[in-house]
Length: 110
Length: 118
Image 1: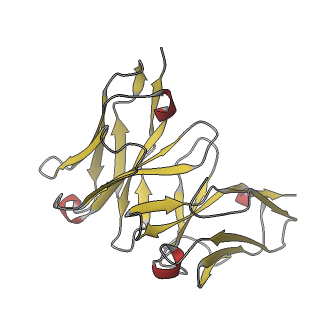
Image 2: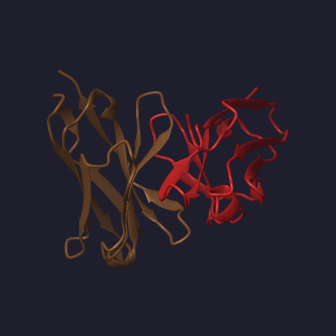
């Protein structure tokens, strides 16, 4: 059972938009920055979003992040088949003194 | 180019020990927080441990506390994870990752597989 809750899977058609939610509490998302990672099978995770809504260089602006209260959201527009991957949210939990990740969301582009 | 390369994984019997290493290059290692994150086969990411640049701050997940020890050698630009009393549930790919002050991880190494089995 992960501290951060993500939907196990989401799907959408190519060209459409999808959002992935990440729900937590005041001890983690509510008072700390959220980051998002993309992982393809057999490869290491890659940073997509940091500090809630910032994109590292090289990440297309089709990817966006937002945070409200104790929840965060990853948005992906103009979906491409190459976006099919697992997506994870992560943050610091001040009560646990630990980094926490969501359970991951598998994106399928139909 | 910022790069992290893990090594030291392998097959070990339950109750055994293993030491993972992570060689860093392309950034000021001594100023950077470093971390171990693992992923069991078919499962999600699980944070294992973090260490600050000066080794003053060290944190562990409850699942490994008392069994695993994180350390670093800034002269060698290397991060380590000493794993003792290994259990079957420690079987995973172990990644090292550089962290920022606001706890985002970038980059990640390619991972090293640890298999605990008799």
